[in-house]
Figure 1 (tube, rainbow, N blue to C red):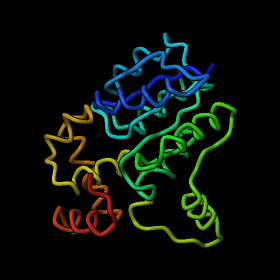
Figure 2: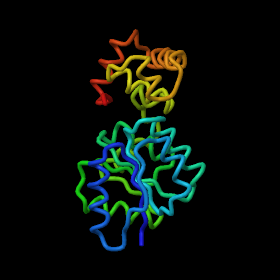
Figure 3: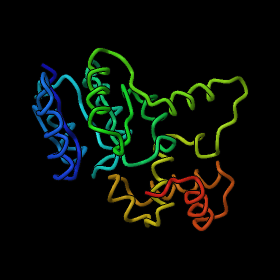
Figure 4: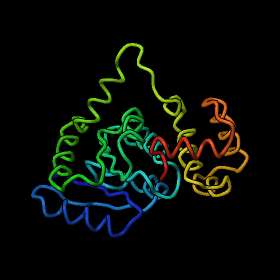
Length: 210
């Protein structure tokens, strides 16, 4: 029996995932969480074999949550589920310890296959992501400016690019407005951008708007 925990802030999505899982022989849902803080507070008490982790939940950024999970539950495979294209978060998720990354437009059959693979100790990536990872390993391969940002800087970039204010971002990520402003300054400097208008334009051009 594969026991799963579902972490997603949308009740309808959790219900849909639960239905898919419980219709599959040998799988059951043993816990749910609607935000990052609740997940980190309860995951240690859940007898889960695999965690399905949504990217866009309230609380700490999902990369921060993922890193904390890998510290507290290093043996728990985490399959990241996202509405965001692979080029936004997949590589960062895998680097942070995820066992796989699956966009939510995949079929239930693909979800089940991904769960079984990470449960066996494997890594799940789509063919397109595998190609992207291979290209990234080429000697001298140059990435986009946003790929050089730290995970927290990248998260703030996506929020700023989506038109959120410093105050809104500070509330979402649990940071002070001053800290968010510092990240903004670092992002502008690293990416050689002049201001928020350039950030929004860049985020739009590279599909980073949430």
